[in-house]
Length: 364
Image (tube, rainbow, N blue to C red):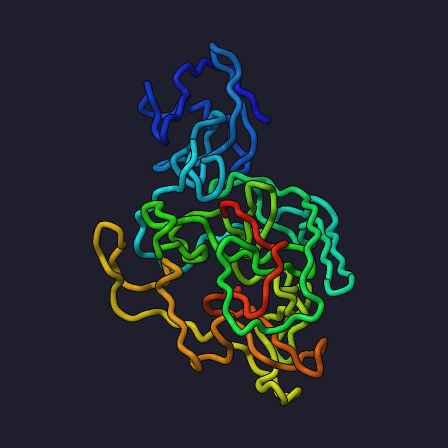
């Protein structure tokens, strides 16, 4: 932590703007010189030491020391993801995005050894893990995500002999599944147009419309300290040696007990030999969204989840990004989910009966 001995009686941010001073004092920048975004800092003032974190406010190219409890006008700066200080959902009005979130470099070593295991116990497959990835991660907390990574204590049951339920169960407020390294697959984000959680206009986490502090493995951190994937887990796939020309290894288990693979699988359920890249059957809608007091308007471009529609047969996978197939682990056949390069990347629904262990009523 850096400390600068100088007077700075007006270093107060309220609602993302400076009060009693048009520009931040230079010592606020000096306190964060050479520091990382989100790192701790302090400044000595006539009223005593002010402690905070290094942040980058709007219209500034440098980090400065922002006192604890005050936002820097960008990123979360709040109590929890998807929420604003004092409760409620954050109000966003962005209607278009380029579909390319700014990904943080994964240059931080794991906080602990990655620990995960599974065991069969009667009708259940029991998954236990500490939630720590074996690969490097982005630096947390950061400007877009105020949460630090911490070890978890997962003990999750999934059906050992899963069955198709005959219905589709939307993901809603739950993790889709757990990776073989014990990191959750959790694609949704608690961000809505105008902050209206009951509307259809939920932002797609990987659209880049809302800054979420996502790292190059398409992951970030919950307020609970849980690191989790919103998209293709690049580091995990590299460590598992996922590559074209070979069937994907097992990358995780879905909450309904069916296996999760990534990108590559057999082209026909009964072929057992011919490999192909598995593709989503979702496509962007054409035209423009409805506009009005509760609707964003603008063209369908992937900013919102509702910008996509399922077109049966347009890809190799069904509406839950899965299919009946054979795999190395299940040579006699199984239903299986696939992570894909195209949206939704991580499935947004289950075809079996998801375990209630994965249901978590929390902001994401």
